[in-house]
Length: 430
Image 1 (cartoon, rainbow, N blue to C red):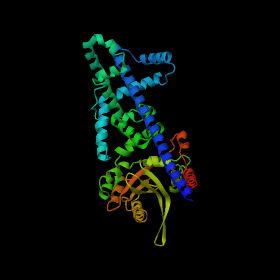
Image 2: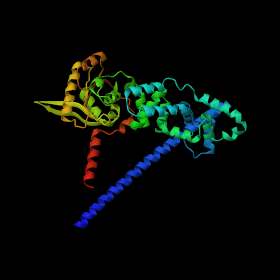
Image 3: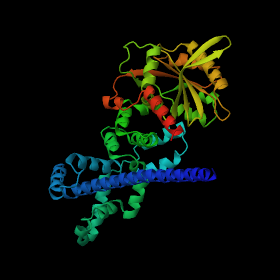
């Protein structure tokens, strides 16, 4: 019997040991992939700078990129990723992100280490203010002027891509790499960069989408969808209706305001043209992953049509979510009509109930989110006056524009529950 117990203990220790080793292997793979992606982006950025330099130096036109792509294909047929299209993107990549822009991104990162809606807005606006009017061409011309003093060294020096880039920016090669790898442009993949490059976004907005892609783990398809739905405008620029400043302490009020969007855009492919509240809700839950993506960072699904018995009456809250960043429950009420003042009273009631029935001692105040099919902002702001509970009011729009390949990749709530059940059963019966 003791031998069996000893065997079980040893087996338990060994299983934990194997699990830890497996976890390290998986993390190492992620780190290697991330490092490889950053090095590839650095290579593309250097290539873009090098091509732009020689275009300027020799007066070559755009056709040089086509000729270069053909030459690479002929001389290095095994090398992929150097098509005319990709080389053009490399040049655009280098032109849009010269070294002073990379430095500004790093500086902005340090300022925005704590999410604050005012800081985020101010810093992004600074990046849009035209402080980077010195384009790469001017820096290249400066490098040309400097090279005239060392004419005999120029041919050998500029056969090396890294030396060329270092000369352009008047900085050590290793310092350039350190700056590049420390900036947010090194943290998203090339496909996502191409999505951003294909959109005429101001510099600060490009920075914001990069940061969101890293934080949210967006694929390039999701990033494209978010740009097309004007997420930046809906989350940063819109004048949001809420009473968070009056009802929540800072910085939670800032974070809640930042996370709120107006309007929300939900894809309801398959819903009725005139969807009622129940139909909208069914569709929201059907593809829960996608809708949590639209809700924003850190939201987790808790319940829908959550039943509460209060006194002798039954009540059902539409949707209850939990936001990990806010450490708070979020009660969502969906209305298929424009905002009415009485809707705020109903939501306030549900917030009080969730605070009493679900909120734990480590949870912050429950937040209410009222989603309506339109609102008069003045009426909505008046309606919130006097409520002690934090409430936000946003419009929502129904869209059927989500790509089919993305929809098929999103599990239904039933599939999520089924997979979770199988996992738990497996865990109980190893």
